[in-house]
Image 1 (cartoon, protein in one colour):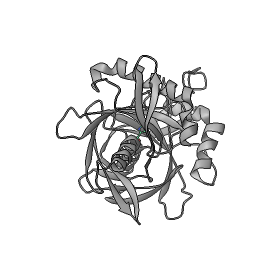
Image 2: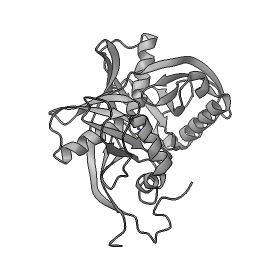
Image 3: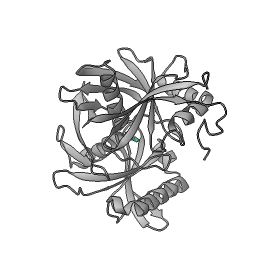
Image 4: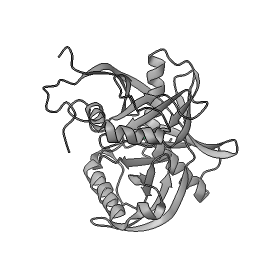
Length: 315
Ligand code: PYC
């Protein structure tokens, strides 16, 4: 055991959704654009990904963050987010978790960081009060009001939007977005994803639609909307999903239901809230997501060579 590989991590959660930032023991992904290094992570170090992000060492909902040297000029660091089944483009709650982790480690004071990701450069500002604001990659609605026949649900309609990951946002699902309804929400979102795959909508839209976002009215009248987001690994986001909120902002703006700079308060299924707004930077409208993460653990993961599940439980 003394020689078992070890990985040091800092865990946090953002609105209930966990992030695990690896601070020691990550594989060397070499150089080049982060999109290339993300593919290298999956092709050459997938067992490492599973060891960090999968059961029995993690919970399947956890998002890992691998810190790397940036490729894009002017960035302070690079990050590749990964989960129980692969790697993400961007992750909003994970970026908020990363900011809090760097603050916890004494590596970040209030101010702004430029972060390279596989889908573009984002910025994260740590504010004096402990909140952070992520300026995400440009987000857009790609397809509007697409009809989809879903076994068990009937015909629903959804928007395809990009928020750093690909989303199908459905409002006419007929379900209440409350925690006690979780089994029905999961069944519906999985059925929608299967129908999207059946109809080949990702190819039509030109992006991988791997997140399903059910939207609806807020439970707290102080907020503007509520969502339930099914992630690629069939887990659901406990937070309001930063990239999902970005996709929602892009749709609202396109629909004329949100003005530039107007704040949208997005609630998650567990009641946590992100504030989001669209604002211009160098003439380009970018989603801004404000929230706060909390540290939950400093840990050393041990990969016992005699443990048959040291690289996760295969699924
Ligand atoms: O916050 O962007 C997000 C996110 C994506 C998947 C889980 N959380």
